[in-house]
Image 1 (cartoon, helix red, strand yellow):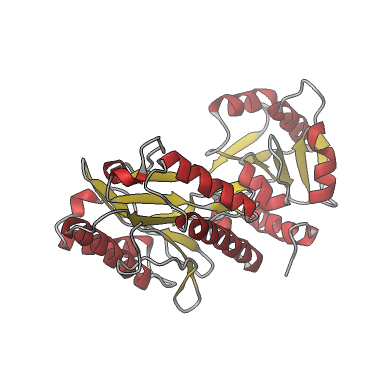
Image 2: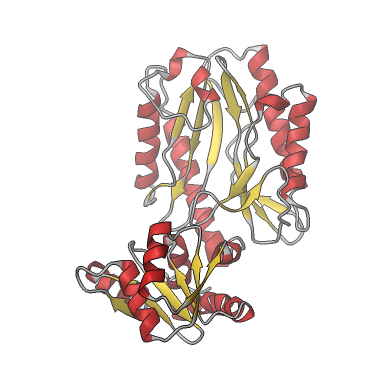
Length: 369
């Protein structure tokens, strides 16, 4: 298995980009999205671009990262921009120096202002705006990436189990979120993959609710959405914990969401479309008469970013391929009552799928506080 500092590992990724550059008749490509710079070089710092030509690559950074680049990117050429020279100015200097005539840029990450400055600085260069060239490569994970995602899953699950075992009704949403974040770091995570979500009762109807001082014992259930960043790669899970008596309405909503999630996971295999998988879950919820209460897409890819390609949702024609890792997270949200969402990370395999997450979610397995 290639290691994260193996130059050949990242050069192979850059060669894939070069092959597309040749097809599109580009002699240069300016990578500005931080995650894409990391993917193509192994560099984990910030405030850096990567200029890829048909025969070499130059990492554009500043003096804060000189030693880090040597350690993380052995053999990669680097341009350390002088003080007072912006990234865009440095990129323009290199484009001029290498006499590039056609250069691709990442339209999704390079701001309008930065692109305008780049055009003004090298006005004889033809720029091509591109969308998701590198992200499409990133959607298919290799063995090392999958191992890192598995590590992120393990950390998140162990942290949840540790915090779940000590939950008390008098703890606040924020306290539970902070405990989860802390526990993940204790278990080896660099940080949480995203701001941890904890929502009690009616507040669980807000899919991205911000934790507050509300006590988890103030209602009969609490939703927890969290994930770990193991250093590069991420995980993303959601569970709902009963904190009081399980009423018939809660049982109906919960079992409907669980049935929808199972149907979607069962549909995952190479060759099906993202829309097919979304439809499998949505149909279950619609048949229960709750379709209008499931308003977001079914899931998303997870990797270097917590939300990346592919996206699972209505009218998404992306065909699933082996190596893709997606979240499956149907939800039902009822104003003034609450929301139930269940989320697992699923790998598309050569002959079907593998659920990477394993925390209990059957209603009879999820004990109350």
